[in-house]
Structure formats: structure tokens, C-alpha cells
Length: 491
Image 1 (cartoon, rainbow, N blue to C red):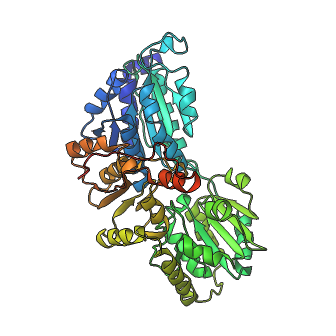
Image 2: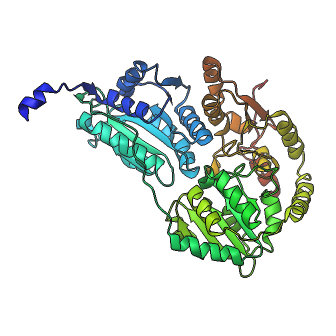
Image 3: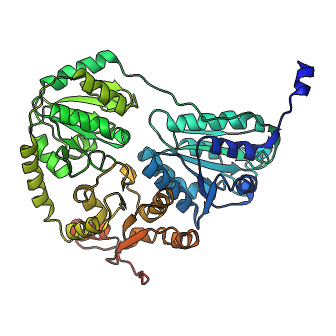
């Protein structure tokens, strides 16, 4: 063995180079970030692989992380960003929260202080008391690479965790001195993904429940983004409308007879006897509407088994949305579904009449929808326009409506839209913000100019944190505090 080992040449590489190899092998073509002292080695590794990976440098770590989120959310592919430790990680924290809430495959690559000083409390540059613990609290998976010999395996594990099951952000940190250490570079390939096969008995029971239902409804969320064809086929087969709130918008095109926005589905839900949640937390039905029809049965289809504990259904099926939906269609082959197109159209017409009373937001949204190509992207924001868009802006394909999910964090929109455009350079991307939210990240206009990122930014300026001001006026007897704004000339 010793003689043979001498005969086989081994390539040595730095930890940083092995990590960049892992990015390339897993299909990463873009990294967002800001170089800094702790991350000089990975920055140089990226510079030497510029033919494989482009680097988009930003004006704030939060901007880099949001752009990675926009890239991931609009494509389903990994969105990767790199920042310095300590304040860099904390600045990116809001976007990691968004990626966690929005089920987006985002990877944070960061440094740390020198390996022998971690945990010593010596007050080193960018030191946090326990950065890894902080990252673990913001992500699905976080780990530290302490030696180049760990780099390939730990990067593979991070990709597997990020992309398997319920996709969520991950983080990998490396001590300052370890980035440049050299070790044997193993052969790498795409990281494996875990697969969960659905229970065939549960499929059979679900088919029986669906066949017995008179007024079924399908509710889709972000977990069904890659199951559009299968969901629509099932919906047509059983004569059920498909409802969505934010993350599920466009899975069934809003102009399809089976689609219902949240206002129309609220109307239909009064007589619903079977709710089929596919990749959805069922936020509308269980957290917002806060009432349910008598005798309602619930089937949940979700890749995350903990969802069945959080909101216990009558029947839970753990598995991939597309695979389970297709299996249900097979099990229901021959099921006679009535043509309810006229009934659904009537419900949707009443919903449209109701939504038109929300003014001036609906007129603005109609104008934007009329100008935006059918395959364009709309990035919402925490604003009155964004809230109205959730029911009032039609979407025709999955991922074309980009939301911040349940985090609802002000200021995510414009930065996220830049990441969407980077990932979809041939599509039109529009970002709709209020003046308050836009100014959280307007410095990234410089990034847009430098890298030629052609996002259309529409800013609705009422010189206020408008929702806060309205609540202070109506709930707190007009006592205003911190809600009026003085703005620059945005145009």
C-alpha cells in the first residue's frame, strides 16, 4: 500500500479551493457577497474560478444575502453568498430568516476568528461569543470546517441538508487560518439528496376520502412549486379549485378555471367538506380565517413530517408534492368529476368585484399587470401595495411571484429583486416598494448600476411608514411616533 500510494499523484488544495470546487460541482454559477479580511482566501479562490462562478459584490451584507434569496426563490437552485464573520453574519441575518420562512435553498459561507482563539473571549476582530450557535438558530443546518480534510464532506453535507426534504438555508463557517491551509483534494461530485417515498396505504386512504367528497379544495404553498403539472391534473380530475396565498401563487395559473385567489377561495370554503393541503402550512384556513365548515376533513401532503405534528390532519402523507399528487391521480383513475367551470367563474367574478373596492391599490396593480409580460417576475414588499397584491395580482407560473413569506420583513423587496434578475436575465423583473421599505436597501442601486442589473423599481411614496401611521391614527387616537418620513427625490 505504501508503494502504491507513492505511485498515485495526489493534488493538494486549500480549504477555500476545495469549497469552491464543491460549489461548481453542485451547479452554483453565482456567488453574492463582500470580500473582507477573514474571507480573503475564498475570495481569491473565487477569483481564480471566475470562468465558472461570477461574483456579484454588493454594498451591504444584507443586500448580498437577499440577492441570494431572490436567486434561489425564483429558480429553485442554490443561492450562495459570502460575508465576513460577526457583523457581516448579523447584517445578513434578516435574509437568512426570510430564507428559512420562505423555504429557499440559500447557503451562507463565512469565516471566523483564528481557530485557536475561538471561544476564548479575547476580543478578536469580528468575534462573536458563539457564532456557530447563532447560525444554527437561523438555519436548517450549520457547521464549521476545522481542517481541509473536512472541507469536501462538510460541504457535501451542507448541500444535502439544504436541498433534501424541506429546503431551507444552511451555513458553513471556517476559521480565518483554516481557509488557507492545504490538504489532499478528493474527487467531488453533486451532493446526494435524500428521498422519502410516500406510504401507499395512505395514498389509498386519501383516494377514498377524495372520492367521497362533494366540495373538495386544494390549497398549495411553496412546497408545491415544482409540482404544478401534477397538482393541476389532480384538480381537474376531482373537480376541485386550487387556492393559494403567497408562496403558492402561480402554481396553477390565475386565469385557469381551477384557480381561485384568497378572496374567491374564502367564499368557496364555506361549503368545503375536504381540504387538501399540498406543500402548505394552511395559513389561510387555520390562522387567518379562524373558522372551518362543520364536518371538514383535512388531508395534508408535505415533505416535512413535523408539519403533521404542528397541525394534525385527518390524514397526513409525507412525501414529495409532485410524486404524491401523481400517485393520487393514478389511484383516482376513472373518478367522475363534474364540470364546475361555470360555478367557479361565478365565485371568481364576485371576488373580483369585491377586490376592486380596494383603491387605489387595485388600479395600480392592474396597470402593472397589464405592462408586465406574462412570464415576468413580481417581487412584493411589506407595504399596502404588497398586501393587496397577494389577492389582487394575477400570476401565471410558479416562482414568478416572489414573497418574503411569514417573516414579512420590511425592506427585503428591492434587494431580492436584484437577485431574481441576476438569475433570470432575459425576464422582466419589477419590484414594488413603499418609500420606507425601499430605503432599507436603496444603496444597492449602486450594485445594480455596476453590474447592469435591470430591475424596474416602483416606489409608492406616501412619506411615511404607511401601515404604522394608519394604525397609530385609528387605534391609538392619532398619536404619531416615528411614522412620518422625509425622503430624497427618488426619481
